[in-house]
Image (cartoon, rainbow, N blue to C red; front, side):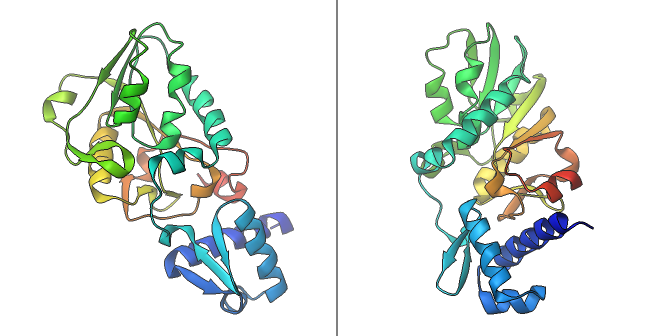
Amino acid sequence: MGKGHRLAERRQNILQALNQAGQMTVAELSARFGVSEVTIRQDLQALSEQGLLLRTRGGALSIDVLPEYSFDVRQQQNADKKRRIGEAAARMVSPGDVIILDASTTAQAIIPYLKKLPELTVITNSLKAAMNLLDAPQIQVVLPGGGLRRESISLVGQPHAAVFQDIHVQIGFFGARGLTIEEGLTDVNLEEVKMKRAMVERCRRVVGVVDSRKWGNVAAATFANPDQISTVISDQDAPEALVHQL
């Protein structure tokens, strides 16, 4: 195993330890991974610069223990990376397709590129997405029903069964709060997860659209198991060790 691989693996393990504990000190991490405190500080600094954790005095804090930010704040986080992910995702869609978009900010980044298609049907639980598609009359928009979740400007819970009846969905695009080899795609809100699970079940192909901050994180509940995920689109900072495993 090369030095670079060991470094990536240790940093991934640090993230997983933080996600489980919430917060750890440099001394605790040093003892756990058998490396010096200087090395741990370098690891934490590198992970912090990638937005994967929050540095504290003498340690680090998992971003999963932070409160969920508003939709507008989350939309501005890593906006350029999300734009590139959105552009790549849109290239997977063909005219006339029926697709699903969830209410994630990364899925929102696909919309400007979808508007260039001459014909499309979009099923989405995102009220924001529906509004953003008002000026694209060639795109049919279908809302699945459910209760309103203000934090994500979305419809959540169980969708109306009739929405998916006799509809063949070619591909679905899903953002997530976390992605791991073991747990698949995970999110923080259980009502949002219910909706996502129902949508995943209808997709021939499930595509995770996640920036590099989400790799190695495990949120409250899984909405797409690893064997349900066809493709993951991420940015160039995605951890190499995990990418190869997936």
